[in-house]
Length: 377
Length: 80
Image 1 (tube, helix red, strand yellow):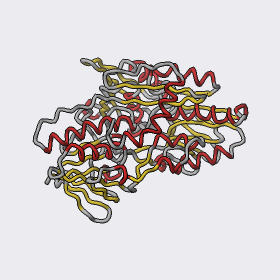
Image 2: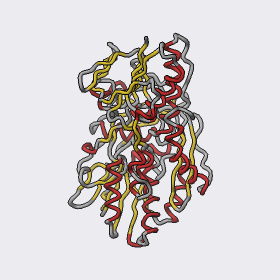
Image 3: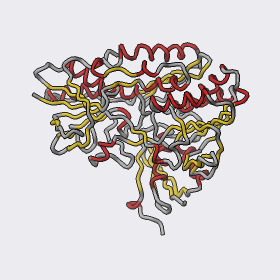
Image 4: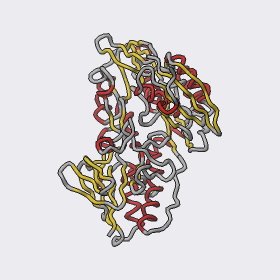
């Protein structure tokens, strides 16, 4: 019997496992998911936790309940991938052999990489971080809030500008917007990463009095002076700092010598096989595939990987290809949203900002658990 | 003395939409040492404006832009 091991029970890992369980006969393959916590977390909801619009517990489900029965779930941490010997070692010493390995471990937050970050900056890139930010916002009585990112790449490129819009909306509702100065620092040449959508977001910022500075790539934070300094040589003061922490690829990938300088796994952008080892696939945020690090990308990639693993195990040609498709919804506050969809060949064409896409985002957040992990869509 | 092409750090961002190539360059510059040369390859038209603009703002040196079939190579020296 063939063995498929999937590292990570996030969006990609869960979908791949469930699609394989659906497509492969029980006597064809044994499917094992290894996940550190055994809990599946819906990360797009974190920003809403920070702004008191989402209860944290609603964003976490038991991974076992999301997986088909025949998928084995091992709650544990992979500490070594032996690509030549085709086996994975777990922290408890257990060894799992594989015929095909799928690495879907996501990105790792590494706040220690930015001097001064710990203790000075808030973020909403983990459930705990979002809860802490919520408390900081609740007790904020006025002053300057700086919103920025520690470094690139980071997950969900629109999230920082979405957070700036949410701050405006949050303090407007609390009737203290006039006491809050929101300053957005972008590492890039514009405030929104995707050029076609930038004018829409810039207009929202201008209308809602969100100041912005471009080409600000943070180099350090001075917690005493309450300033953030950039590699371009600028210094910006803050009273409350909301900063996306630095990211790296998965630790086991780095520790096994498989990552690039940022720990990202070099992966063919169409076949999603790792460049050094075609029997190892990689999906989602842990790869170096040149698309946004987002759940939608992981979702679409998972379908390609599942089809390729089935073909490989049946000794058929694997023809599925990932076209770079990503889609996302952004909430601009005031019941307005915007949807974007794009791939390697087609940049996004943004529809106007409006209620429809705000509802779309709300709808997706609700139906995610029903449709996405099971691979129904 | 200029570093030879083989000593340069190559950042291949072809097939990535703007701002992908600029993000690659910023990541590369952070990891490089002062004096090192980097090449970022981009097939995105937006890079022609973004990359030189950022290099100027960040105080590094654009040594040249080489047009290739379907992409451009931006050669950058990290100055500080």
